Image (cartoon, rainbow, N blue to C red; front, side, top):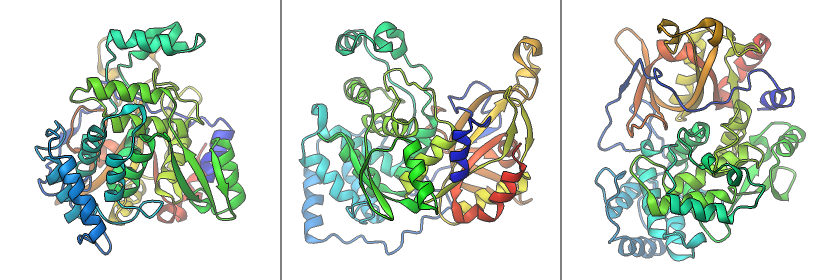
Length: 459
């Protein structure tokens, strides 16, 4: 992580923004087969090792569980629930140990936090049942997560503009609200991993962000940012983290989205259409964008556009509360041309598969050049105007959740892509993906032996 912070301070030329994918990106992609039983993001090889799975409800848990069953009995089956009602979703979470495992940052369980959403007043008069329904959809099937913004009806735009200060860019140019291709892929990919790996903490965030406090407190271990405490403190200062309390080994952060996130969330509550972000997606993604952009994100206009690699890594480290090392695999010149790689494709593949084998997902950023996007083969491509074949034209973040090998040992990665309008897994062959891989985040212990070698190769 500390190497990435150095990149931020030196305006390093690898600071590529990872934005929505464009046509041609799925040339070698197919839908993966999904299991009707295994609804979480994890696939066949990447087995979730829920240690000491607990499926027995205590007397207090039973009271909360029964309360939720009654509270949610009239909630209609959502378009993202795979035809499961809330009762079936709660049952699934209970049987897989994801409901009552007390693994949240404050020691609470998924059940505790769902109950809090149901019984405590929500900000902006949000409908708690809609929030819980969206949360259950995500926890049972993180593949449904999307970064697609919803449209804002004209009558709502007028009310929004009237509420904004005169110096707000959106008030000066209302078209900025019409976000057609969002740049929240890094935040959405982190949301996928967050919901899949930490359901109790994810639900605690949903509860806190949708509460009257409009925030959540996180006790972050300093070593989750760097083994050197002084470096960890520097990282927090650079990222403009809001510190509530501080000790020699940890810090309490107050984390919140920008105010305009609640405008977006309220619109989605009233006008949600299938394929758009839910209330929960809006609040989580806006919060992660706010964290990564040093509190400079605007949910109305979706600016600044995307997260650079170091910002994404900081967000991932905070969510996982452990040190994430981001390896940059490509050398990119000042004109955004891909010129070389910092290690072999075999080593890249091993980093990913070793991480999957240990039970973690891998969030990656990959790029398309004029050549790999297929543009150089088109009749209207003009290299004089549009740059050489190796000019990077686009980047995207996705989450690798599993992999498989064929009889010849060829690897295919199973992924969740939040910008493909597809609520299923997608498969990318290693031969297709690895040459496009710009960076990936790993638990520090997975790649420590290779990190120094790769950093030496960075131009």
